[in-house]
Image 1 (cartoon, rainbow, N blue to C red):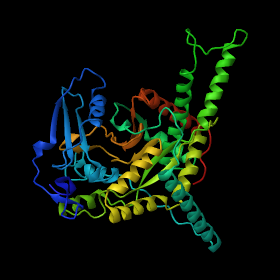
Image 2 (image 1 turned 60 degrees about the vertical axis):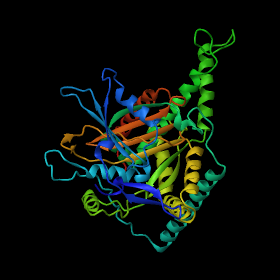
Image 3 (image 1 turned 135 degrees about the vertical axis):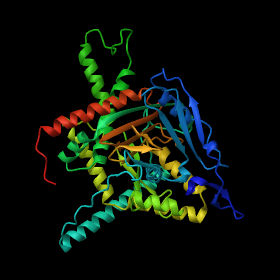
Image 4 (image 1 turned 135 degrees about the horizontal axis):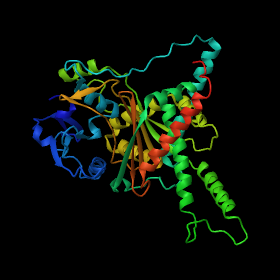
Length: 439
């Protein structure tokens, strides 16, 4: 055993938190659970129970493998990896997990993962270089100002999905759906964007539809379940008018997602495997910066306009140093004051926003873990004061969209997931009906 997974966090004589190596009894970290597989949601229920379970024992390395027993024959089994975020961010932990896997049929080969292609640098005149630098400076200034304002006073609009102190201890609901990666590529190519643009566009479209429908359902109704109207009014017209008012109200909401930016150069899995064997911890751990992303809630007749609206936001974030600033400022604060002030600041930022959105790329081909073929990978995070978290995990040409929500916020995440699927279908139809723009 190596790396932080075989270490625990303790305080030295000066009160500083340090990692110390410990002997690992693997049996202490393997949990075999007997579950009732007759319940179609037994996996989701087990995960949501873990989300509010007592925290991991800090006297042991903070990770567990939960093996769900009960399946028979050719039915897929399930294993849940529970890891404390102190060991690393999502990119680091996912890379560690994938470094323990091998290609299906090639037990000595690491899996292939997608690598972000670097765009060729466009030759610019001196004037355009100056404009780019000014744009970078301005976007960074605005991003840092909004981030600092959020830490102090600026918060999202109150809505049915807005989190609050204590929501992390509430019962959760979990649902996931599978999206075709080819469909997302079709949409991103049609707007000359990225998968992240498509994800944010899908979330914006689905969230708008969900909030409008949710508010309309809770509007004053008579015993027949219809909107209350006067005797001489047209009930259908009143319903349309009410929904229009609700839609206008939803569009005015400030709803932001707290997204993570990987500040490290992403090494390949082969390098990671060598680092694990050598016990190196260089560049691994928590090295993520925060990006505060506005969710597009304005109604668009063209479904692709949701992606275009999201792309405008992400393009501004790309042309800024906001993510790098948030990471290094937090790292400097931790070095000067210890972990408590950065923890308070992080919690404050998360509490002031509404959603967490994450996109983690996975292997492009089938892989095995301890000789067992992996069918799907579904990441979630719990313990933060937000009511809704959305994750996209790619694997084998599929994209798994995972939604975890507090029952008080989104009691029916399966409905929200279906809206996401429908939004993507609408976008694909719109994309196929027009020519692809030049890159």
